[in-house]
Image (cartoon, rainbow, N blue to C red; front, side):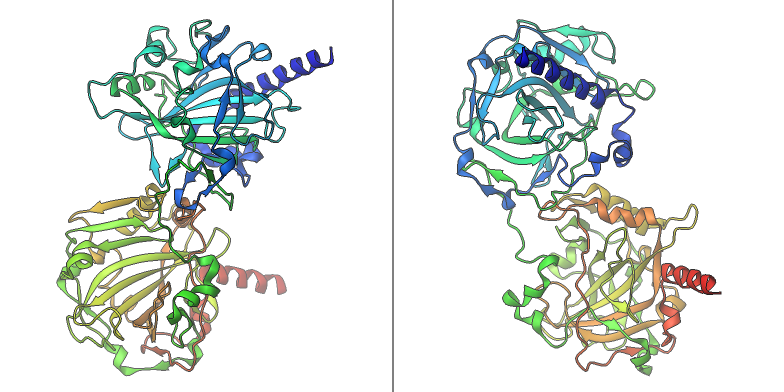
Length: 595
């Protein structure tokens, strides 16, 4: 009787989870708001993630793979296929009596306790892939999840209550390919049995489908190539109770079969096509992802991070040098240099679209590079004249720009001015054509602070704003977008505004990332570039080479070590001129309070 009551309770818990996860008023369009109603969605062990294979750790305990009960090869007695408003889902209707059980895979309870509950799919659109997990930044066309629930767990909210086997789905390159058998039936049923809309319509697969009809449980090598980590449900309530097993080998379907997914409709919106029903990847937050010995390892990761700045010099001795960057610019101690007052002049090409630009997620920043300069040292985007340019006139050509930023609550500019750190900083790097990169003065960098102005309706428009929008689509390391004859440098910074360009500070320093070579003529401009809070938040949409949210991408300020910082005539040496908007607001509030 006790066991029977436990089974009844377990079934009730299962049904509650299904109802909570799929009946509540959440959509894939409002993922950022899921945590408002479901706090677990803001947790530290959320799924899906980008599986960075270079950071995975081999675990011998996984190499034995899984043991699938004989029932995997038998047709399941009670099985219903339905549109639940967010996906297409196949449910085991007699979970309590099911013997489709799973063990192995280093599961916490290794006694055939995990029992098949349901499977469902996630996909993209007619033009974009839509798997939930990604591998080294690659998103597959779709993903299918086979969900197993522990019968010994007290409730679905119990730790390790679920194990999910995730398989990628890939559209075959062969246009004549068709995945036959039960796979084809799953696709054709969507339209032939009217699973277009959420509701009472279901398709009865009872007694006609075995799990082995869908996944290759009896091909041992194929099911030994997988990655494992601990995570969560990928829909509300986002409970962090899932042992995830993501398999490397994708399942092939035809384009026509994949298109059947797009016949279904969401439960929300006006006849809204069920597409892009996947959750965005979540930060790995220091979790370890494990792999079997047969699973691939493809990524080569950098040997430095912003978290280990103190040890950069162990591998890159220049990082321990005496002329390092960034620095704090103490304006009271700057020295006016009349040679700076002439400012910069630029070639007319700065106003003409660059032939070939590439914007890339580098795993530690987003960088826009002139590919002709990168590959061939060819560029007409020159500084025709300027102060302290060791290479002389027409020698420094635009090479690349990149960003540094903090978090939503912590600013992240590299340079500080009178101790004030701005929300972000962008560096425009110009390279000498006459000097080797390791030569002193080979680089000239124009650094611009980025401040947040959150006036009603404000956002930075033009190409500067467009790029801040574009980076949200380049979430993973090595994701890139190319721009052909579409952006000029003057579209990005106000080169032809003499007031803006005449206020700057200059000193000799270094690269602010390894190898930290001391070859940079730094020019840090006084006036910030303003963006909206929403645009600033776009910086936090990407993931670094470890799969974590890309944030705090700045080097801490370095000692000045007797160097002199010079200023142009119009650059202020007053601390009040360098307070960011946020600092001014806080200072005004304090003054008002004291008054």
